Every structure is written in C-alpha cells, then in structure tokens.
Length: 386
Image (cartoon, rainbow, N blue to C red; front, side, top):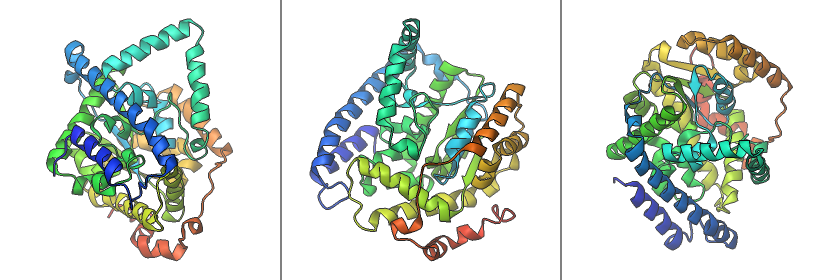
C-alpha cells in the first residue's frame, strides 16, 4: 500500500497513541516522558523544513538544474568501518562534498542552510560563543553513544536522516518501533511499493541537488548510509553513473557490535526488547544487508563498485583509499595524500572503548555459522563476488 509522508506520520502517531500495548513500544513512564518531548520537536522541525522547501521553490528553484555527477555511496553492514571510511574520504574536499549532521536535522532546505550559515558567520564575528555552547551541549547529549559511534553536529553523518521530512528514514524505528510500518525500508528494493520507491528516491535526489547547490555543483557527492545497502537497485536506477563502496566485516564481530549499538539506541526510548524478538529482528536485517549487495553488485562494472574489508581498512587506511582512487579513476591531491598518512598513524594508535560479545545476546559462534554460514564462506577474497 502506498503511503505519503503525512500518512506515514499519522500512522506512526496512531500506533504510538492507540496500539502500543503488547508491542516493543509499551507505554512506560520513561517512554511517555521521552516521546512527550521528542514528538513535538520532531513535528515542529518537519514543519520548518517544509516551509524551507517551499521557499526553495520560490527563491532557489535553479537547484533543480544541478547535475549529480558520479556520486559515491559507502554502504554495507553497519559496524563495518563505513563511518571511518566516510570521515577519511570527506577530508578530500577537492573531490567530495558530504552532508553534516546539522544540515540533515536542522536545515535540509537551501533556505534553512543559508539562514543557519548566516547565523554561524555572525557568531564567528562575535567570538564563536554559540558554536562553543553547542559543542558543550552535544558533548553532554552524545556522551554515551560516542563510545560506540563518533557523532557531532559538525561531522559527516548517515544521510538516511535527510528522509525524515517524508517519514521514510529507517531511524524512525527507534522512536516508533513498529516493524509492520517501517520494516519495508530495511528491504527497500524488494519490499517497498514502486510508487513509494519513486517518491522516496525522488525526494532524496532533490536533497542531494540542494546540497550541491549550496556547497559546490561541480563536486562529487559522497554518501555514507548503511540503509542504502537495501537500495542497490534504486541507486542504479536514479544514479546510473554512481559508484558504490561496499564495506564488509566478518559476522563474528560485526553482529555483536551491531546488536550493542542498536540496543543502546533502542533503550534511549525505553523500548521493550521482548526477549529474543529484537535480537532476531536485527539478525534478519543483518542477513539481508550482507547478502543483497552480493546478489546485485556483481553485475556492475568494476569501475562502479568496490569492496572494502574492515580489517584491511583499519589496518592500513592509506593503502585502502589509494586502491579505491585508482579503481574509480579519482585524482588524489598532495594535500589529501598527507591526510591519508595522518589517518594511518591515528589508526595505529586508536583503541576503541566499545566492548561487546556474542554471549551478551545469547549467541554462540555456532549460531553465527548456522545463520550466516554462506556469509562466512564468502569471506575468502577470491569468492566475495560470485
């Protein structure tokens, strides 16, 4: 069934208010208190965004003529180094431009960006007090999650968040844990109705055009978005010259790391784990996001798709990125080459604070082999692409 953004919004609110008992979204006191703040803020922001989109059509309509040339999409199973690779490549400002968190959450419209950028310029002239205050607030707000995932309003982030105005972001599963309403997004190519695919991908394409209009129409758009792992066919249809980098990590580490991260975020809204149901839902998502690229990408030419192993990337990011540039025929400037050397040294010194294990979630190595045996078998580099 086709759903507009407004219909999806009303559906999620209806499920939350009237059909949450006996679901992941049981109405505990903590959950009610969190949502009583979160939902009004979410709705107010979306109204502001749509006012901004309307003003874009009046004052900046030329953004629709911006060409999106050879965008690069970093995708793959979450917790496989996609964030690390994204942050490294985003330092190449000669070739790339990418969305930062503040743009997606606060200003996806051109109008909104220009307003906040103007306020930022005024703040810098006045000594940068506003920027320091925001940095202090985000350090407090993101203190817990930063042990698992580096996050800041002024850092590149997953651009699935830009789909919030049309209520088509998989991140909505955290405040609204109703798989029947949102799970099709996790299997986008297969489970989302064609009309919804067109609506969502057309909106996403316009968001990229808006970003390029502000930050440089001649640059290559860089996306990092594990949710795009379910959208291989959609990427090919809407961005026929796109390049895809698929990150992979062996499931014995990736699965508990993913469960740890999602459990942490899940708990912020006091969602009910409901025994093994949450774990099994995550395992189903992981299985599809491992296998879908392997089913689709082998048909793409080598010049448009690459695979990056987590251990290789973190062991030597300089060599990994150099190989990507050679494969995709990208120019590497001397300045970015120096950045890569810096990243190599930082990677050697980095020690993660994130701890996790399979047994935390009632899993064993045998369980992983049983559910992901084909994935484990494909970890021979000679067989990763059939």
